[in-house]
Length: 396
Image (tube, rainbow, N blue to C red):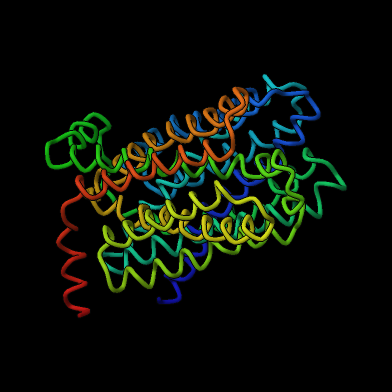
């Protein structure tokens, strides 16, 4: 990459970094909220679902605004929204207020990622576009690592409220960086015209298929990873309290992304996504039946490797299926469908635990859902877009 492209990727990568840091911190805060406010498993499910519900609203709304007003303006706006709402979160005194503010936070978080992905897709083309989208998504792992460091070294000393303030202060740096993004070369689009174009026959089918894939991936990811610390505590596995375990799970995401980048240089996005979905299925199945610390460690690392690689590859696939003038709306709408899955997943886990379902049966449910995702991929996406296929042919 050129120097300007590296700087661009560093700026855009902060979108994934702060989204991941926020989601990860919530997963570490949830067990503390359970004790502080005497919450049931169902209430904890609502806490995590409230953020995703806000994302359902934020993703299509901000995608539409990005097509109308430009990627740069909307990226700055989403950053301000979720940063200020997180600061307000530290003032909450009960679970109802916490849930309400997390919904607002979710609007900003949900709108940030599809707009950031759209900005990357606008800058690069073909095979390079796919690889750069996965590279940008790899910043998610860095966000998880920072959240783990804050949770184990800062949160025990100052509490979850001040930890959120510390995380929010770091956003000032990202705000300064984003102000230096180049202006968008897009011609502003009318909202009604953009929506009509999105539902034309040539765009409607990929939108539905990609929306279904995002639903499966987000339901599985948020259902499993937001509940991961709590589930392992319920199993009585002391390794969950180990900083090394959490850090390993976070670091396992990075090779998952980078191996996907390598594969995208050799294979189509559909084939890479198929490989990662199968790997996620096997890892989830193994994790569901793991009973020892060693098995939990190994299976958790593989689950993190394949699940995040799946997410990154789907990020690489989605924006390329829409023309630039409606790309933000298409990306945001597809991810909004996925965010519904992100609402459903954690809530279902909470309800299943309240009804005394075993951890193994819950994880088998995720395996079944992921198998449905494979079937959607195989039957719903028949070929890659011409530009990417041409790049692969030239590379060979």
